[in-house]
Length: 406
Ligand SMILES: *Cc1c(COP(=O)(O)O)cnc(C)c1O
Image (cartoon, rainbow, N blue to C red; front, side, top):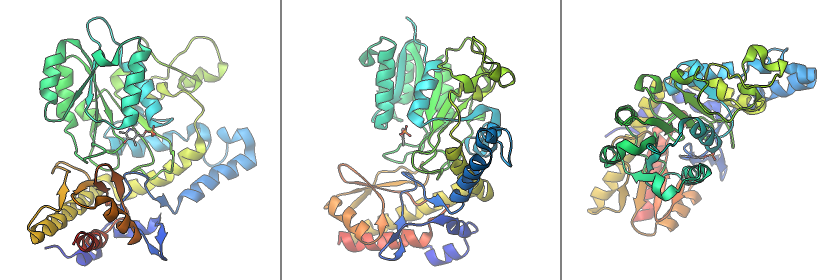
């Protein structure tokens, strides 16, 4: 069995924890397993934001064009680090808006129903915002969600794609399921979807900054994510999207556009007739929120320093260790007190179904300074993240769990 203290001592990533502000409980660091919900604040975030505020105070609107980091180009500083997290080229990334909004914007381009192809396959029990987005987007086209939207599980997805292939327009799937923590094989999903002649789009809210992604190589058509979960970019932080380069110059694609997607060299001539930038930036709509971008940059710089491969590896070891300890509790008790809902294909989140007194146990965890996430009926989602969680925290969690469950 692994010694958590030794693991932490020899962990080459251990010093990254000190780059974050860890919330306190009773004068001690919380055991914060909620990086899948709101990632912790980097200590550097306030100085990145202050730079923007200073530039604003010194130059006013000229801050877009002068100063150390002219805001007009701020976007370019985010696309390179994000391209390594997404496995894409920088020009395939755009940083803008928020996740659900971006899903609507990208569906406006990539869901173009006609008489023959109009169906959308999505995950059963998808995150509620995605469900509401799809339902209302479909109605916006004057279609009935009941005839358009087909739900599938990862097990029956291949069969469902085949069954609906002739009428299939789009498959919208997630990278990691928010509830179970299951990680999906996005490459093979993309292949199946393309074989059926449809578009493959992905919601990577729980995937980016957590698992290895290779969107360009996998040939995914589009994807979006939010900035505030594993990416640590702050509550309501700015989101991002990936659009495969084969679509960038296609001016026949419908778009819901705005002036920040307009060809840069002539944007400020302000003429009639939308001319998109021929990169993913062509999907930008509004003036970029530079303060949110500064918080995003602070967090992404830490990812660059740590390296996503190293983080993925440690994240997997943390979650494997957690599952090992839970199985140990069950086997010592001689019965299944806690069911691990997460399959072996996963990132760092582990979802635990607590069989008895789940809600009380969850509240007791908080009393003990352990913060995880509650979902009905008795599921505790635990996400030890590699940037700031430790093996010792995972061990301490299991020790407290063992006591509470006894
Ligand atoms: C967190 C999450 C969202 C949240 O969307 P916002 O627009 O950022 O509020 C949407 N979809 C999924 C799958 C999520 O995990």
